[in-house]
Image 1: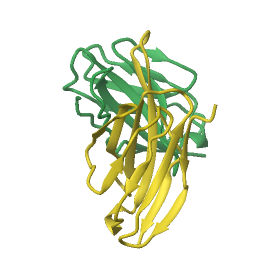
Image 2: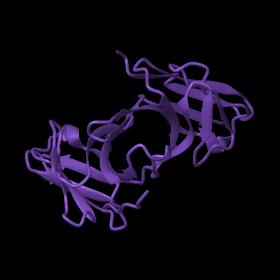
Image 3: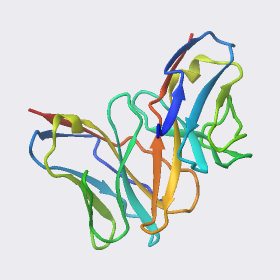
Length: 111
Length: 116
């Protein structure tokens, strides 16, 4: 699976959009980008995934660059409850069982 | 539908004691896994199972045993606990959505283990 690079931490004002970047420059053509988050002391939670196209669901939007070497997770109207560690993971869907989590980005949403 | 249930939530052991962390899921998922999470670190895969009767090692398997006798249950055993095994343990099960290519893990709430 391709390696990902994320900033260690980010801050965001409540009500504003939170844009979390992820670099995956070694991604291959059959690898998906997944995002999970972990609110303090809880188990990680799946947010969204994508291959080439931008994706949106009830939680967030995922923007993948045309060369697929980076992506951005967007929380359109961040709330205090979105304070969490966000993990960007790249892997081949259905291929392999060793899903690897890095250290992620600590997002702090403040008033 | 309870999802993934882990017990106990908290446990304190003495060095050399043994114990089992329980994990159960009611989603009929074939794949289940155990992770540990230490302060300032991401999750590290301990063991995983792709179905009843089949288990395999992850990144950090030493000191842990698993078995998978049913689809629902995937217990993690510490045969002789060591202080280095103080950690938060998460169990997860996985489902694939073939139409979208999604490979989604559902995690339990975690079990916090302290070994003195």
